[in-house]
Length: 448
Ligand code: UDP
Image 1: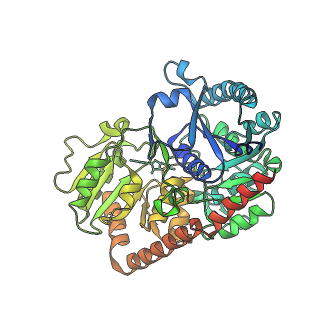
Image 2: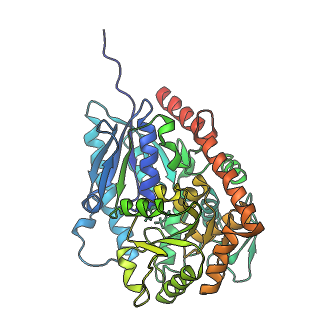
Image 3: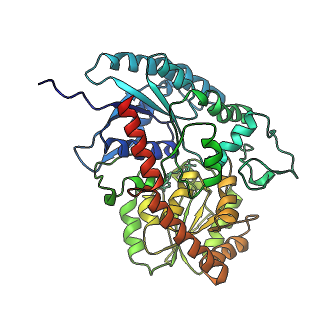
């Protein structure tokens, strides 16, 4: 009897940054728990810094290394240089990887690539692979970049402008994605983000880390143009109750989870503010100082992630004492799921936003740049599960924390946060929109 054909092999190419790797790997883990075989392509430089963990030795996600040339770079690079180098090196290396893989026992059938690398589609298509970009920002933010690309919106924005775009709520200039921190590179960043749409009409599937009930109108609007499949929130995809224990993670920072969990265990329910600005955002010294005083002024305890590169911005002699714990990195999912955590002071990166939503934790938003400003607007105005700090004075920060954890408005936010958590869970459970989209995609892939 002939041997059964090998399972379809999927390559996953994430963008080498923590906020892109986390959802891509979570999705890869989920795909590997179905009938697919999955290889995640990780850049050589990144793997040198990373801790790779597998919750099972039989994890079916394979990791393969691919160079984007960064390991040979000495000293700092401008964003432009980094962008050009990564593409120039990664593109031929991806081609070589696919060519080499083609003669293996399990040649790849599909490339899932980070949507910020649209050139990957051309490389994979030329080698006969199916192609699916994976968007790791919200559908709303991605739609805004589509309008920026197609002239529906101009950058820089008019200061007093209020924009009305299809399927999106009215947005002021301050709610639109901010590129101001990329001081000399804003046009490069803008091009990078707009180019996500340069060849989308040729995609076989377009994956979004969101769920229908969260961004329903925008998803429906997009689905009229492209073969959209919402598959999020990826953080909930691999929970034990989804029968997937084979879970690989890649961490670019040193986890300090034991001390955090022990410390949280010692605190009362809903008595801790969790504070984190993700893997890249950098606060100014005055902002750090106001935040430190704002946290000290709040009646709650605080657990504050200050990355090693940010630590010297803490106010001189700052001592959290009994009230707080400052760590360089933590297991954010474990922290957000802890009963002691009452709210999340966040920069509102899309992963952190979805992680707060998926755990039912209300947010005090201190967006810094990029998509964070828009995510913060949605948390506050569209979903009603957060407040945005206007200005960054200590009194304002403490008042916003109190506004979320106390009072009538806070109670309403917490109620809505619980409701969204339920919807997020339903989306990824058997029969939910995201779970069904994944199942449908796998069936389609098996027939192609
Ligand atoms: N994260 C973490 N521990 C920390 C801080 C962040 O594990 O101490 C994770 C967080 O769970 C999220 C990612 O890092 O998945 C950050 O992604 P996000 O989109 O929120 O922000 P970015 O780093 O891309 O700005």
